Image 1 (cartoon, one colour):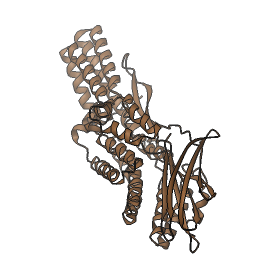
Image 2: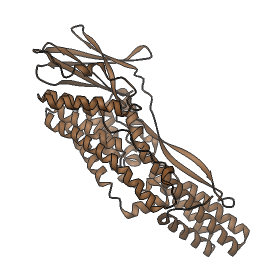
Image 3: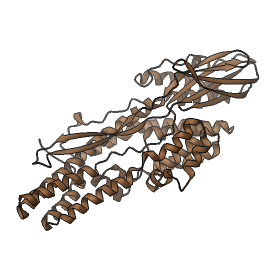
Image 4: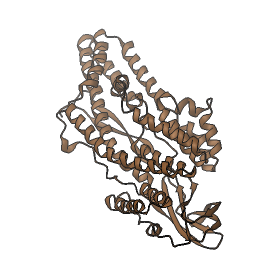
Length: 462
């Protein structure tokens, strides 16, 4: 096996272990282990710190969830929403504020998260070196692509609820711009990797291009917003782009197009159209995946631990949802976008680069440890060489932790439906069903007006 690593991070590790071996100081190596472990523990955060927030979300108490996030003495602020995780804080609080109907405050949080994500592309040299030597937890959390996209969906809905459809449309167009950017973003990153390591075979580089180029949910909202302000041609264009989204990404849009969509452009004279969108479930979370690979060195440096993040779904109890009106009419809400599938698809491309970087970093650490053990063996004998090798392996393994940071409170599924009605006031009830039984029901009063967008949201995130 031919080993070739990236010089920027292999050099620093090699120098550290080599110097420790040259001075034959066990304390230096032990210190390296302690430092690596301490950094990892400090950056990892405690998953249990989410428990109070999760419990409030599951009970539908969004105000309680906000209290848990804002409590500066609580576990969440101390272990999760630290200085390195500002983006997570604004994403999570912004989404919960949206669910709570605090639309202005939600937009402020989501806008701050969007700004920080854009700013995060200019990483500091110190953070980059730290991620090369230890793991990606050494860097500030920079946000996932799907988070950056769905920020604009919920900012658009915030603006709609505040009566500002023009600003809502600006947010929808912003999504289009970001999707165009994504198409080029990882191609450039792939080229950078290839330039850094000439022996990487381009055909075997584990980076897959994302097939997500159109958001059906964004196009659906664009259609509604344009129709709401009387721009029928623009609404028709978004309708056509919505159909294209399904055609271009069949692995994401496995469901049929919602039956009500075909009627969205046709509202009979004298009637108004009621639209309902329901968000269910919660977006995927990351888990750590461990792989051990063999290396051509003597024991104990003959293997390397690789730790990758992988996205896993959180199960939702909801299997179907139905709208019931007080006039006796009813209709099904149908899936328009599996937001969890979008999250996994857009992460797939970046994960390929993470795999490559992690592999090279782990090999670099093992190489440095093996060379240091060899030097120590020559200077202090076999026992000392073995000790240096073991300490090096422990330090390398302890410092390899996957970055599993991710926002937790985006929904997973977007369901939509619509019906043409005579203008008037209606009681709208949405029933959520799972395993053949009613699991949740929510009722709202709505006014349906002609030549207007009559859109209401419902949430059941369990």
